[in-house]
Length: 322
Image (cartoon, rainbow, N blue to C red):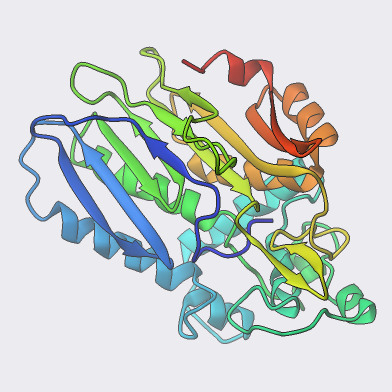
């Protein structure tokens, strides 16, 4: 599970060039950046403040770093007015958990904190008996209501979709949204498409792994990446990923550097791309690839093979690369 929203470890970058009249909105939220580009010619009064307000509202709902967020109060069992957005994302997360056979699970919040990947850090490795006490029991709230919830592996994707709704309400048709590496594109940048390229983890080359763009007959395309080649810690000379397997309770240990998931279509699905990228990363290369193929998921796996990086992509991903 991608656990720490504050850092971006697998970078996606945009090859847009310089477009006249393109509008840029940038800022900082969830401990990371956001970058929005709009190529419509509309007059956009107060849009930046509306974007910031919406992102701050989402942060106050789902942050596990703000002690007064709705999530933190929920985890402390404090009485609150029912929030529909919170309940909707929780229920959607439960559906995804079931779909991916628990390889994504928001009820792993206590596990996240035990390993020191949340707000509270630790300098050692938790004991097995400690881990076993906080491993989620399936995907249902009733079986896990003694555990804390953590939305870090889905909140950025959710935020991207919410900002997309805000832009659509302004009748905007051509934009690019990037929140900490979770991306949604709609329309084009004037006369050419938005092109997203996936960075090569090999520091010795600047050539991207692959580039992709949305087809004209699709309204949106969401792209999300989960990986740990920049996101790990070392304890007693052993490397530990910050991505946890919610079923075993331990950091994942496989040769995957990153997994990117692209979901093109008539609806925005960044929230799903975010969770699916994490799930496939947790499954590992073979099981993750087979699951993606079986479910027609466009996924690209970058993995370490004989001291070099290799790539494996599903047929659905091959269909959308440039």
